[in-house]
Length: 247
Image (cartoon, rainbow, N blue to C red; front, side):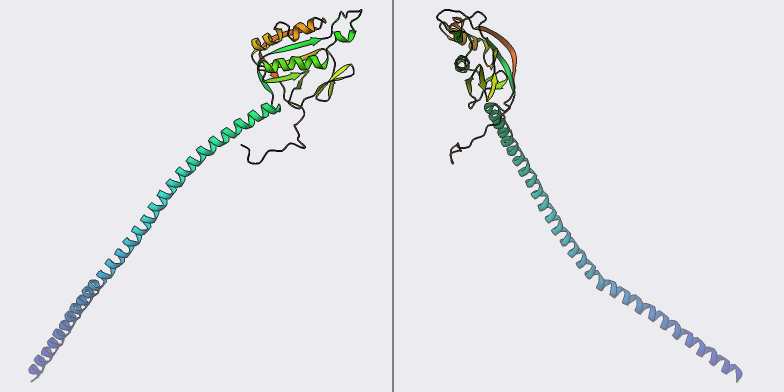
């Protein structure tokens, strides 16, 4: 009796263990199927996210490429503009320098001559006035005009730059140059062709011949490089104005 009950108990235990094992195996199988399903379901989502990311990166790459091309174009435009500005600036600088030379504001140098005129030391008597044996403002103007006609590009008289507005006039026993009085000797500096300017002064019946008749002492010296300083006075116009639209 006891033996039969023992066998029944063992059989029940074996059945319970078998059921438990089967349940465990079924649970593992279920979890495995579930995980596979989740992975299978997640795969399209992951792929879609990657595709979206790829599209986003391609759009950014396209934008960066466009920005790079625009930057290249901007750089080229800046180079062209700089080149044009450099040309314009160079031209303006050259025009300004030329204007400073023409206005007498800038010091200049170059080949030229100096003409020194001094009063005669042997004034004649008799019927000729002693006033004829001194250097006058008209004598200086004549010499300067001859030098200009011979191509003088810059002139000074006793260190005063000769401008279009310069005045050379008699002031008693002196000569006023740019409102400053000077007495003899008078030194005229001229930049230009030394030979041409000398020939203009020395031509027959010219200014030198005329002055030598009254024993005015004249010395002409040629220079390979002569410096003429700029004017001390700035040009100022009260009445003259630029005509609008005039090139």
